[in-house]
Image (cartoon, rainbow, N blue to C red; front, top):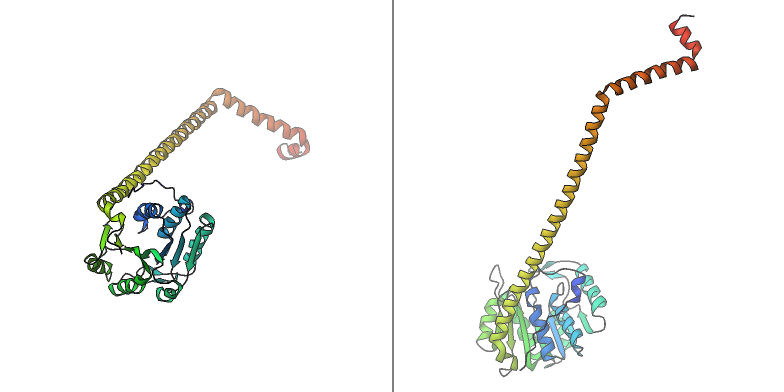
Length: 299
């Protein structure tokens, strides 16, 4: 198989930054996989804020392929992702309308079990399982949805390296590896990739793909850090220039104040003040002679 490594621009990033979100490290692999194998139907169980879904969408849009993209989620949350209201569903829906409205995208607001009847057996090319992450839940999701997978289908499992609390995907993933051909990426909480057909051509590239996308994330993260550092240097230079301008203005003000003090202490300034007082005095007499004579001369 002649695998193409691509360098996509994810349009949804114009609306929000998801660089700190759990799935973001796998979107380049997901994007390239879609464009290389050109699936007819992709179904994901658990979408939340949409990083994985938008990655699939971008690939379908760029490759101009007729792929059905189905996201199954109640958009109410769970004990692992947290619970939330309709605002998350609204955000996902808005991104789809803004950037991927021309695609065949279905947002299915159902539980995973309720959505089973929406799909016929052996109809899914790529199945992404990213719901509740207990051992029992992920095993149930796999066993109930596996009949929907095509004979040459592929399954994604997220969080295969998380061992804290009651996360159990890593346990189930170990069991699956004994019975299926798999490859895995251990960054970004881990992504397991299971192949229903042991002869899948992508498996021949397993070592290269695992290495490439793991190091690609490091390059991306380093690039982001470098970009942030460069921006910080520029901002510091701008601040330094502004501080220099302020210091120059303060010096000018100081010089003006010094000049004013010198003028005030000069003989000229004293004579001027004396003159102004005399002038004010005579003006008062001229304008108010009666008051002046009455007050000062007792007339």
